[in-house]
Length: 155
Image (cartoon, rainbow, N blue to C red; front, side, top):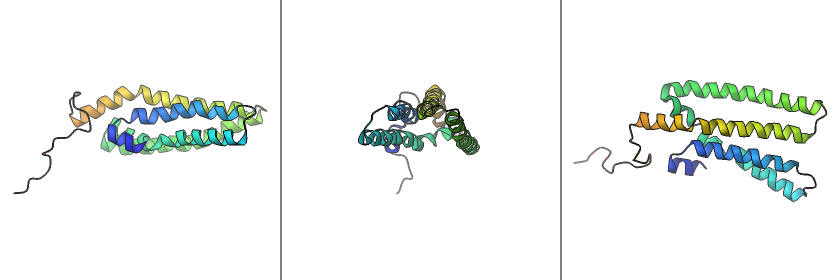
């Protein structure tokens, strides 16, 4: 995923699509009468989707805010990650303590993945517009294109 994201310069789709896929795949693990092989397959597929968003996600704050504010934004994102590390298990524990099934907890987590993917897609115009504005690249030139004569000249 990160290779494709670097090659195309598209970060939002490489972040949002794995999150949305994980929201669609993870609930499949709750289907009744799944054999162990299929359960393991769906768990591995959802794990691949869940962990696939990370590399392109960590680039987004500096694309949106620039270099100096991006460093502060990474700390802010890390703070919310810590908060999510507390809230997620607390909510799942409350769901299970209220005698709901694991299906309800899995659907709650899937909704969180879906929400994160949709927020990323909603930010796409802001992120791509900011990248073009900072780089000074006109919209007709792709972000990976560069003139051949950049760099120091040797005489």
